[in-house]
Image 1 (cartoon, rainbow, N blue to C red):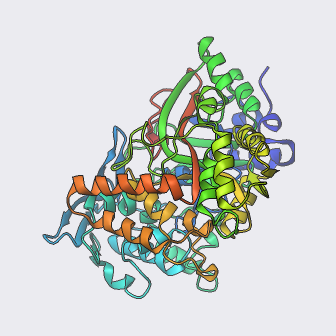
Image 2: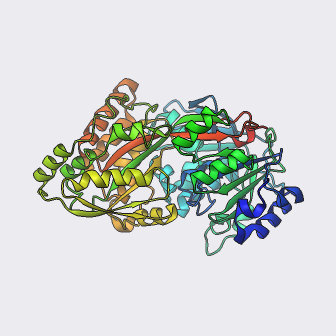
Image 3: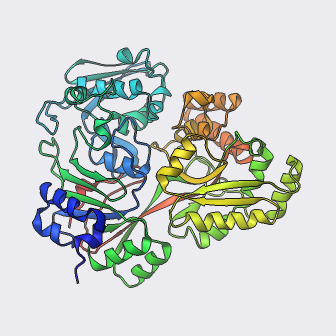
Length: 542
């Protein structure tokens, strides 16, 4: 029996969403029946963290993946090799002899969804806009010298087909390409339309909360928070049209429900199945599973602004309460690999699997360290967690180990959006959450997890996990900058190795595992392509 639209989308909004689907070109048949139609990619995913579709403000992994399929950046991550970039909106580029200027030569056949011509001047404005608005993603540009005071000069468009980036230092060009040119901040936005829609000088930020106005393979048709995202193929896309004309991403937080929908054929892809479900369904040969090592690290976030966690021996003790091997054998099996270093496996400069995970569960060692730190009888604290299926068992394991040395942890479970809000406002003691870097380089996490440009509360550097955790060390900042600018690749790699080893002992967080992302697919799905940095919805077929 085929599930009804109410079963799939939820009773409260079924009629409204069905109407939206029909209006988006999904047709009356799809509005009445939930079974996946041949021209539509239907996915079940926990997407309750989405809060906006403005590339200047997006901070969550799910929204980032979605916007990458709506807005093309200057260059793209190579689907076959995530360490490389390939031409996209920019068909080629030149680098000055001193390594401090990049000149991008853009395509001349780019159009926005409304038919307006898209130019390098729109791209320059789009990048400048990120810096001028000053939301968290401004850090992506700020850390490479692009600041409000000079942004109109350092990123400019001398003509409609040429974009010029002037760097303040000779950064590694491959890093700039992946960190900025392939990032969501380099989405090509419709300047004219957004300026017409701006409210109180917000450059269209409020407008983009629920809309897309960029150049890319899909456009955003509808977003109902914590319910559904609907996308449709763009009318004026410069590249090859998507194989599937529509994308529907349904918010389904429960892994069991995702499995049921996948088995019935009502969805094409499930993103959050448990390891047990994966093993069971694969053994029955009911689904296909694609796995990738993701540059996302799940970690225990310790607020260094709390006097207890300001003590580096306390933080080190917490690492010995993590049952890395036990998690690998059970909770994170098929979900990730143990990882205690801030640099993800696969990144330039990362410690290998053995050196990057030297810890094991050792309650006595943790107790000894706490005594040295001045807490022989332990202490009380709280741990915020989300509804992710692995968060609760990991939290409970740590809670149980901690109780043996007098550390009482109160676990508070909440929606992802609520947790992120608390953490970004420094309103927490500890939390479990993930952080995904956007570059295949140790600098990606070094520049966010341990480097902190300004630790003042009023600085609101919320896109820096280091700032969220009130961690600031001038000497560490200097080491991050030294590694970034080292021109000799082998020396640069060794600098990152030394920094990781130092942070294993006294860093601000306790890293637990690197995510192994899975996409569980109906047998009808073909050509699902992705890597650690993005998924390519437009290449998927049935």
